[in-house]
Image (tube, rainbow, N blue to C red):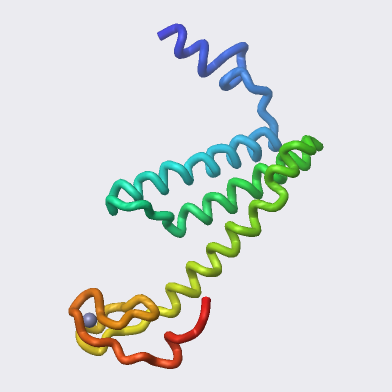
Length: 138
Ligand SMILES: [Zn+2]
């Protein structure tokens, strides 16, 4: 177990890294950004089809903004450019997600939520009457 201790506490430092506030910001960004893959993979395995859960976009947005802050602090043009614009699709996907969620209507038959533009309730099979509120665009 000496090798493990040496890996974790290398040269008198945690993982041999010179820790400071900005190093914590950068590594936190890395951890959050990486965790989105685990969240997406878990959701996909759980539903047995490819799924991108809302949490994936929040983790993408948070992680990339932390990494952008770190790269600006480090004045590293390569990583500044890599994270400068990624917030745009992440934010847009969150907006679309919330609009889609809010566009759900209640089924007159069973009372459960029905996705927008549905002709039949996926829960009870009742015919869904088209409404003005569910006809809006995303
Ligand atoms: Zn129903």
